[in-house]
Image (cartoon, rainbow, N blue to C red; front, top):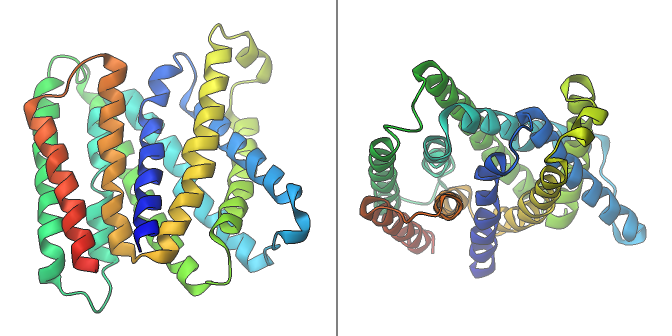
Length: 300
């Protein structure tokens, strides 16, 4: 259980990077950024499967079909929606909407033997932290982030859609891993990566910016570096870590650990802006941390 918790927290730290990635790639479309990240993930997964072919298990057609479906929910579709949300509504509000995923996963993925009274303290602390952070972000962003209300509302809608996609992915992915304990977490991450990379490549070929235009872009080298870094770190390695957590822990505890993604995303955002969080935001992060600790205690 301890290693599952550590793996889940590390996955959240890596996922938090994707919230600042769109701000590090000015001029790159949301589709190009999402496609580049997941093509890098797919290439890494394919290379790992080829590196030790004799020791890697091959998926059945049914398993590959499951990987394809989950790759859309948890990777290509989710991240495209998230990038659109950040483009229209800024970083902080989409981060907070995505931050409600732990609440939904905890509510929908509670083990049958776990009483609501044991789960309630962690759930309440997380909800209080989200409410406090939302209020602080609305106050701090009043003069900057929400300059165009229709764009902002559209960004909120994209964020809600992304939240729904990843909530479904978290629950379905955990259920699949529990039904297939014979499949290693790393193998499943690589199968997901190949499916995700293939889908991202097709998406980019159909709707993305032509390669000559991308190469001619003045920030092409920086954009490529961001795609590779988030593809290897926030997709490939984070997926392996998350699968380890999903195999060792219940869906509701995994859901609580996703709060770490919100904490790290806000930390990265503040670091990128070169400013300190407010007292309310720091208090919210403390509530998030306490929520995680109470949830771990409940599941023990």
